[in-house]
Length: 138
Image 1 (cartoon, rainbow, N blue to C red):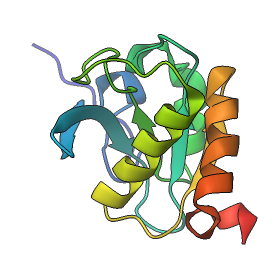
Image 2 (cartoon, one colour):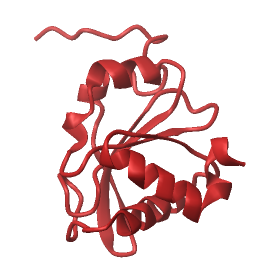
Image 3 (cartoon, helix red, strand yellow):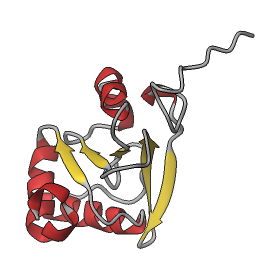
Image 4 (cartoon, rainbow, N blue to C red):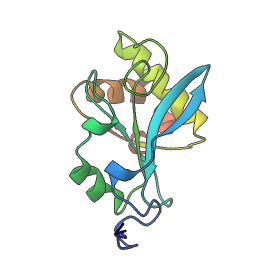
């Protein structure tokens, strides 16, 4: 068996590329939310919000790896999607409220948001609902 190590400056915290970053889970109001967390711990984390029905593996690892060189990245599965528990929400409002609860559960004080497709709508609703938590909105 051969082990290849990623240079420490490429992935300073996790030491591995996105596709090999372990999927974690956190309980938010009785629902388990799946997420991946990588990159340096300094600065404001970047929360990735994907399109409807997408799972953690649908994020492009080349993009996430590039972003994680300088930013802490937190990618999530929405409730009821992928490895997250519960029933999938059917409104942007519910998805935004879930993301806000997840941000709070992770103990984050500020986040930057990057939404793809439907995730962009979710990001906008998060900014409207919780502008104090969004680094670029204050």
